[in-house]
Image 1 (cartoon, helix red, strand yellow):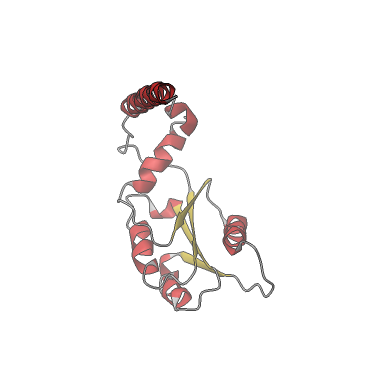
Image 2 (cartoon, rainbow, N blue to C red):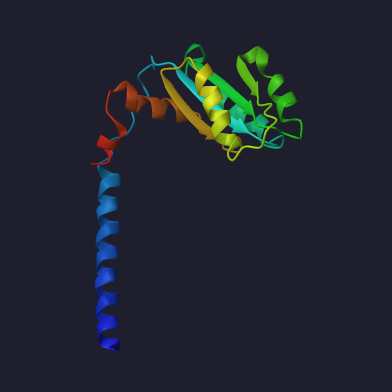
Length: 161
């Protein structure tokens, strides 16, 4: 019995190593994103935030600081029933084009975040919609890199084959 388990362990270990090598091969086949082309697609970035007063300012600054044309960028933040000053912080950025949506649902819901994202999608004007969290930090070329895949009309799943 122990011998059978040993053989199974060796087989599973070999399969695991083969899968890891196959995935590494896939990473090396990915092409470098072309960040020299000026983007033309409009993008809406959605952030559902709840009690994120400690994080939201840095996230907004990170997105507004993107190496992406401001006229093509729309930033929508949904205040998901925050008990802190999240919405007040977001309002400070309204003159920079940041939109604030406040959820004011009285009834109990199973998923406020789904509702928040759904409401924001209804307001989006961008050709591409990207969602992220209020505690994320992005590099300055984050949007440009993501959108470059769409600009080339190459579906993302094709990049992994």
